[in-house]
Image 1: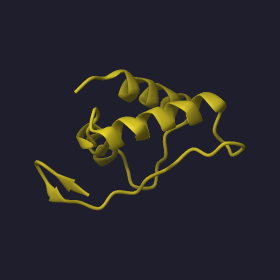
Image 2: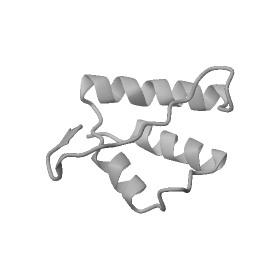
Image 3: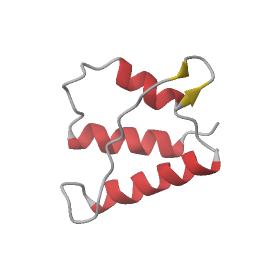
Length: 77
């Protein structure tokens, strides 16, 4: 993807799917975040920045995922 500060960067996406290991809340929040990314009301900069600060082989816990999704879907650009 293209970013203003870093140019072209590669990013992995972890998506929540209904009936998977994610709760209905996570699924709904993920869909909201994806819609905001698609319509331009949210940017990927903060999402990428948080991932850069974490070890590559460490995934957030369920509670961390929900908190991050709530934060990202509540934030305004």
